[in-house]
Length: 104
Image (cartoon, rainbow, N blue to C red; front, side, top):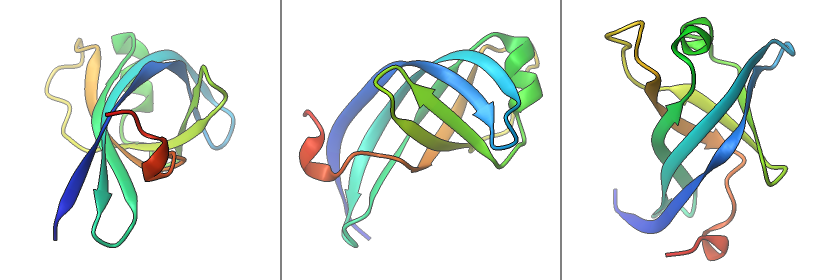
């Protein structure tokens, strides 16, 4: 399976669960890729206070409401080694712009 790098997407937003539980402000930095299937995927880092990250970690219904009014569906894709850490690896599964809208 081949991938084509589309660029980076960075910003701030507010993380919440689909049930409305708010986890607070978060910064994100993800890299986007175009799969040979035509699907756009992204992965990268989410940064927020450690306490909020601990509450959100492990949930599979997270939405990141971005400053540009987008909504990204995110999931944590790694294990959390340190509960005091303020960053975690994420995959963005929905809400990404189409390939032609990414800046290289």
